[in-house]
Image (cartoon, rainbow, N blue to C red; front, side):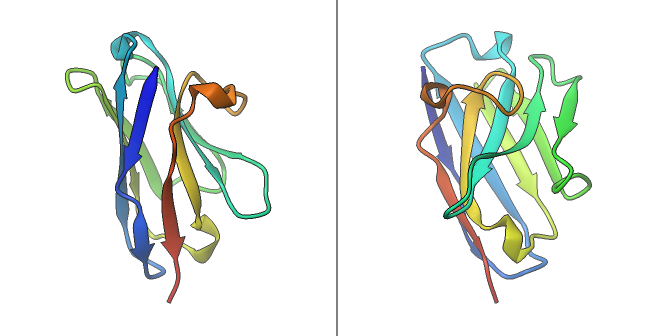
Amino acid sequence: VQLVESGGGMVQPGGSLRLVCAGSGFTFSRNDMTWVRQAPGKGPEWVASINPTGLVIKYGDSVKGRFTISRDNAENTLYLQMNNLKPEDTALYYCGRGWGPNIPRHEWGQGTQVTVSS
């Protein structure tokens, strides 16, 4: 299993970013996928999950209404569109294979940094 995240960066409050996760080494289209994040000095926080068809999606309360998870199974790619970013969204963002907040660490990618600051 290989997961490679990209698209992070620094943005001002209220701005937007789109994260991308490229999956390989497994049948992407048959797996639930998840975004988690980890801020400095804090534990992992579940952000969102999506089922293989993209028809079942769940969000964590802190991002609901601002973030959108989606996937392109033909391209083995997972996305996270982040709008109206806040300083508290600053974290290292990981994609993972599986559903929900308890995905084993070995199922995560290497992460991409998102920093929200004025």
